Image 1 (cartoon, rainbow over the protein chains, first blue to last red):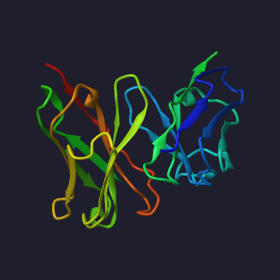
Image 2 (cartoon, rainbow over the protein chains, first blue to last red):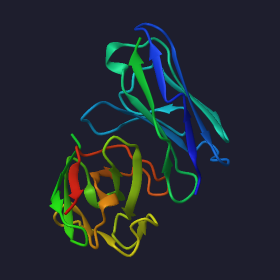
Image 3 (cartoon, one colour):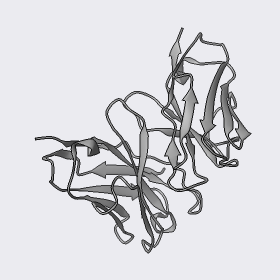
Image 4 (tube, one colour):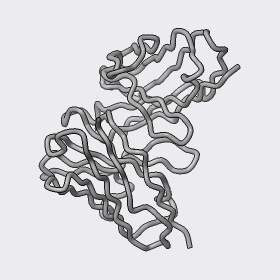
Length: 107
Length: 120
């Protein structure tokens, strides 16, 4: 199965600053990659699919990029509600697999 | 508004069984493939199983194959997960989720989850 590796494990960012999260696949997943946001005690929320397409209702400050094996989620100006755990997931191959998550915390 | 409401979780002994349900509303349930995804305490997400819109095709993670059975009742807008021969490592919050496109296994709407604890 494809292994998804996210870095860093924890990212400390001040409100208003930019956050850059990385996700690497063990083999090419083309553009078949999603990003989710999960807050404590809540279900994950779809942010990005197709590596770069924003899901319905997702603010424009969330941007996904990349293809093949290297992907990035950029949050252009962190708001208080953006502090959460972010997961990437590939759906190019069976089974679909998730990264281990990046926690974005307040600096 | 799409709503997914899971139920059926609880405490079960190793080797025991549980059936989870996911009641769906706010969308045309019979037109969408569905899935179960789980999250062990304090850890990441793991895809468990998926089912086509008609129920005619089912898919399982290797970790649950032969022990779990996914099914659906489109007349009741309900998704199920029958879990047998439960192990401690099956302890997790189980989420049901919709697949926006049957050919692309990612998840756009999620329920709030139901906790399954396998312990003696």
